Amino acid sequence: ASWAWLNANNKQPKFYQSLNQLGVQAWKRQPHLRHLVSWLGSLVRFEKFPEFVNDGGYPAEGPLTSNEIKYLEPLAQWNINEKNGYSFFFPDEGCVDPSDAIKILRRAAKDLGVEIKCGHTVTNVIRDEQSGYIRTVESLERDETSTGAGLITNTRADLVVAAAGCGSKASFLGGLPLVDRPGRIEYAQLTSKNKIQSSNKLKLRRILVDPERSSHVLQRKNGDVVAGGGGNLEFGGSESTLTVPLGRAKNSHKQKYVSATSLLGLARELAPSLVDGAAFTRSCQAVRPMPQDGLPVVGYSAPGIYSVVTHSGITLGLLLTALAAAEITESISFELLDCYRPTRFAAVDER
Image (cartoon, rainbow, N blue to C red; front, side):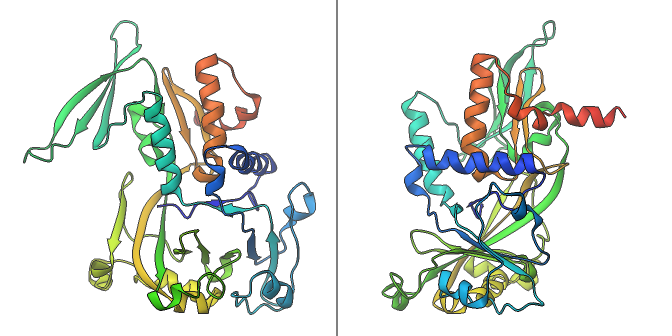
């Protein structure tokens, strides 16, 4: 349930922007995943002039005129004038289908001997009563053949990497302070008639982001149109992602869903010919893993618990996992991550 935009623009403060720039570079250098990325560049409209572009160090073109926008993206219908914001192009940005990346990473993990357990919900981390060291991880395994609640299993462990998203707020995983930030994306596919045209007429060249219309839209390599934005979710579990099939979404007014076509409707204002040539397929909604201050959390949140939580999970994923692996296996500490340690929340609580 990720729009999967690789970017660093307008990410403040400056040190956080720099971290995201390193994250983008990690994608360009990862030999097994870099071929998955579409480096399209992003067209972004800002309500106010984005002062960060004057700081330098991040490629940007703008403010753009309507003709310049049309040249960069013929399908865009920005309707820009001097009264409705500033538009910029960020050429170093891209997007990726996270499902494809996950498949490659899972295969690589299995080749290294990693056992991936699906259908397990971690319920506790068990420690030795005397030493306090971690002994096992307790989880609830769903039994598809049973009518019961499931089976409790214990897996031996001496260290836990808690890359659990919103689940990281659980006390046994460090109890990180997270805020409720629901999000939603919608998918559409080109209709059979328009797939023939997709190679030239109905293909987005750029990623379109327009906060003024609360909309953003991109097109993945397989032709899928992915739209995000709109209002917050009306409901959602802290650890769950809900996929709404087309049939159920049609009754959204009864289910308290946002209209199934709301985000695509907003996206249509940005690229009408593209959206008109596509049909809604599904909608995903989830709660974003957002630490209390909006910045990533990387490091030991409790003895034996190494936490990695961030909203920019796709952009930063490759970078943070490499740094975390080195810190854990080599017992070193990167100064680059000092601003993102879990201990910063304890320091605030003590004031």
